Image (cartoon, rainbow, N blue to C red):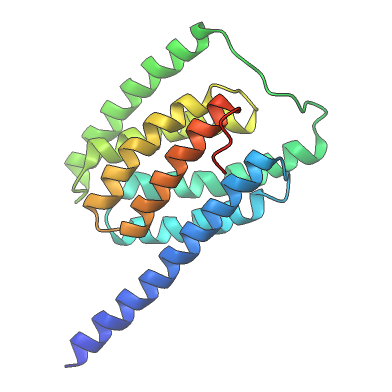
Length: 193
């Protein structure tokens, strides 16, 4: 009886943390799209911290690391928007993107092999893909490179599958919304939200 109560309490706490993570992450993305910077980076950090804990508990280790990286990038993004004079979106030529994609694919393979060999990760290569490509997309996003949205369209699509398989259903729902926001961000004229 004690174990059952303990499991219910743990599940309830995880659900509350997941709700906070989803709400803060959605708020951040909406604020980013609307240009509420640097304020948007506060819910970004809270949401990422919440997801870091959840992912670690669900053995999505690389994704957990990615969430910690997002916290650091929220601080860096806030600093950039406060102290940088650069405010327009940058469009890069395809060449740097090709290099980023090749390097990210190699990084995904290497990290996936490490996770497979040394951890109990149940989806090491999917976890590695969202993490490695998420690092690149985040870097592009905080530097206002418009094509970051294309990366997020793919990453969010894969993340829906990852979170659903790990029974983080609200997280999967979040990535559906993120996918719509990424499409909206890339095409700008659609304005879904």
